[in-house]
Amino acid sequence: MVLGGATAPLAGCDLFDRGDDPPPAPDPLEPLVAGALDLAGRHRAAIAADPGLADRLTPIAEAHEAHAAELRRVIGRTPPTASPAASASAPAGSEPLAALRRAEQQGRQVAAQACAAAPAERAALLGSITAARATHVEVLA
Image: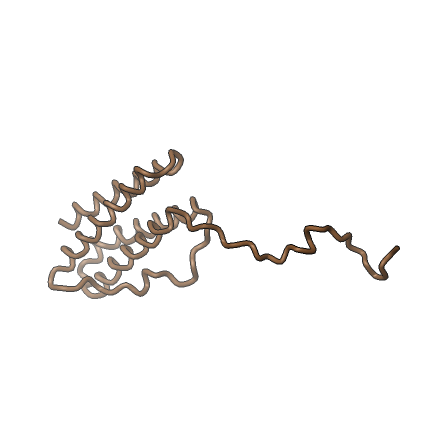
């Protein structure tokens, strides 16, 4: 029996494939992407609040943005159209560099923990990010 006008073959799996597959589980590196973008945003906000800090903080913000981009590449996900870094506010208090230093220390700890738990193919990247954040702590001292 031939169905009138049917030119494509019908496959059983096509009949039930409605795209109802659950989304993939979050990648363990996604919090590091968010953290890198947050740190970049904090540095950019501090620069906006005090342009005299630009020479010191711009390279750090750019490093965090590069880390976020590389982490996204490893994860295989594209960046959102709006970055969470854009909504960051300047560090509170009279010592913005001290607040940034504390944020970098926390970020270094998170990256070090992720490095220790990561599979070998990701450990080198995470080790580099951890080392960079340790360097940022020193630059902010």
